[in-house]
Image (cartoon, rainbow, N blue to C red; front, side):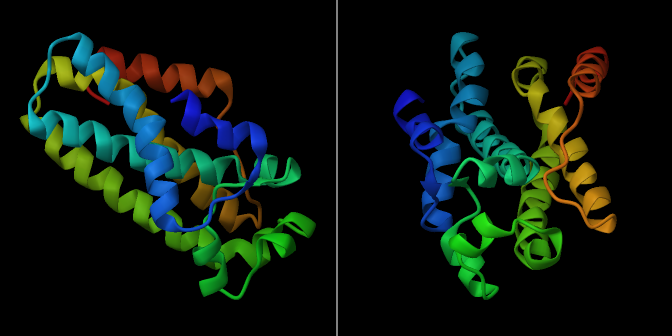
Length: 178
C-alpha cells in the first residue's frame, strides 16, 4: 500500500487505465481485502468481491477528488482516457473545468457504476462477515450519485461531507450490508 501511495505524494499523471487499475488494486482493494484475511476469509469469490469493490470505490473517489488532485499536480484520471477525448493532462491542470472533462468523467463514472452494480448484485450470496468487511463500499454509490448531481450543475470533484460519509456507513452497518 505504501509503495502504491507514493504516487499520491510524488504527483504526476496516471499513464493509462491499466496502471490506474493496478494502483486501485494495491490501495483500495487491499483495504477491502485485509479485513477479510484477518477474519480468515480466503475464498476466491469473496476476495474477487473485495477487488471489484476496491476498483469501483477507487474510481469513484478519484473522480470526487479530481479538482483537488489537479490543483496539486496529481491526476488519477488516466492519460489514455483523456487523450481519447482530445485532452492532455497539461490542459486539465490549467483548467479542470466540468465542461471539458464531462466526457472522460462520464466514461469513468459509467465503468465504476458497472463495477458497483456487479459487486452489489453478488452481495446476497456473501456471508455476513464478507458484507461487514465491505461496509466502506456503501460510500461508492453515494459518491457516484454526487458526481452525477455535480455534473448536472456543471461542477466536478464534489465530495460527500464527513458527516454524510459517517451517516452512510452507520446506515450500512445497521442494515448489515454495504
